[in-house]
Length: 231
Image 1: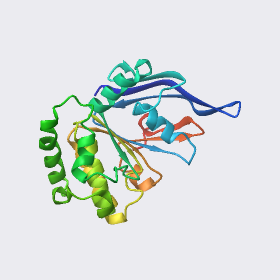
Image 2: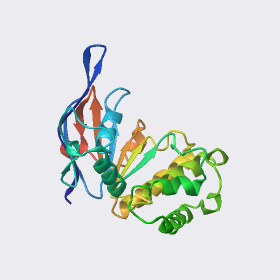
Image 3: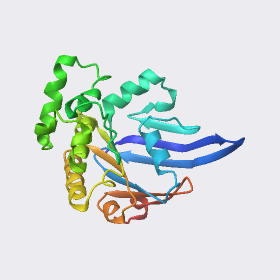
Image 4: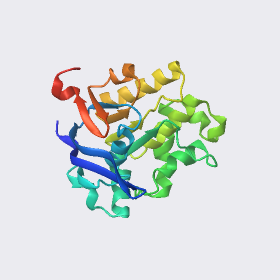
């Protein structure tokens, strides 16, 4: 396997009231294609900051994030949006569905920057909703969905551009145990198909299902099961 994502001595510093707050302090790692990586750590450890950098939603203060060899820190906003649309799907704990839109419309919003003609959007969106078992809910709004249905809609939106990399931030955090297990099974199935999954979790039982566990503490990488030989 070749690295899809490479972080090289990544620092992220935020100015706060005249002082510099270090959210990440020199993190380096490679994420291989087709792998399932869990990122763990206490609140404030830098997990979300790292996810935002990997997802090209933010840029490092120092160091590099390379996505398919592209230095994301050198991209302007338009180029970063195109790269995200082409390569990355996002899945969040709070679903982040637009409340005024139907399920189908929410999924289609991910195609806005894809360059695909609008007449093709439905042909891409409806098969995903069908595969995820919520096609019959496509005309409903998020407030009319169960938690599991909302996360499946969010997953369809994340997949509609056929991304190589899925970034999931506590994707089962708002779900009951049975529904959370169903969503995890869907994500593991996507990894089996060859996609790359990076998942932030506080749940050790979820992290244990990953191929690799990365632990952050105070903005630094303190454990990498790939290097220490622990599955």
